[in-house]
Length: 263
Image (cartoon, rainbow, N blue to C red; front, top):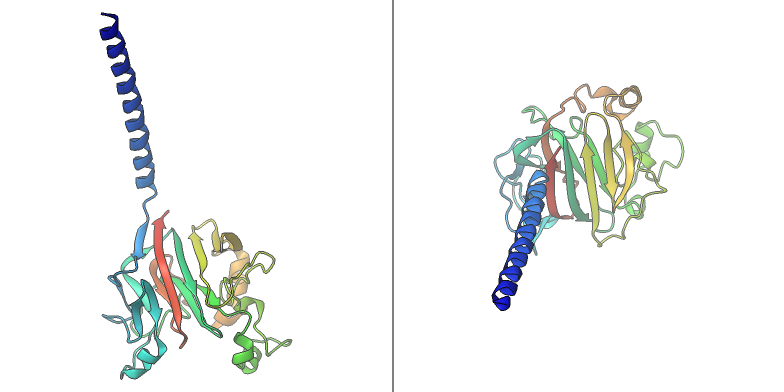
């Protein structure tokens, strides 16, 4: 009789433990669902991606070894006259957290756009959408002549060098990345970037650190917008909802693990 009682008690204890574990797992699943990521590129398909103002990917944008890359030689081989910036055209995003990983070659240059409006008479996102800059901070100036461009932008010192607002993880031509927080991996190695956008605050992350923070549309933001590169671009950052895009700058570029979460 005692053995039967002990067996029943053990069964009850096991059931309680199993029920507790199930509840914990259900709770975890529910929490994960609340924070669901939308995968924009999983390494196997370019579904959703296309040229800005186009129906398909421009020549050169391909998947290699599970990475979304721009192959410059392939891009130049074909007779193509349209722009080569690409967008994830399946959905527009408003408030979000965007994460991706990327790497550049020596002298490489690219960028991440967001809130892109698709304007038929526009050649591309630049001048319309904010850009998280991607560039080879260390070697770019030694390969490309920046003097005339920097003069045009009103710079007066170190004209042959990248200016702070041109460097990686900057809000291009608006908010320079905090160089004390920039920990950039060498060319050919992977870096991770994150953009968190809300109307109250925008954050740019690089390799796990916040390097840019600003309030969109603030007095400071307006001052910067109206006194710099975008002073002659009335539609710059006007859209508060739009597509995510990747920039072609005639440079090889590699991306992977691209995902976004709506906030």
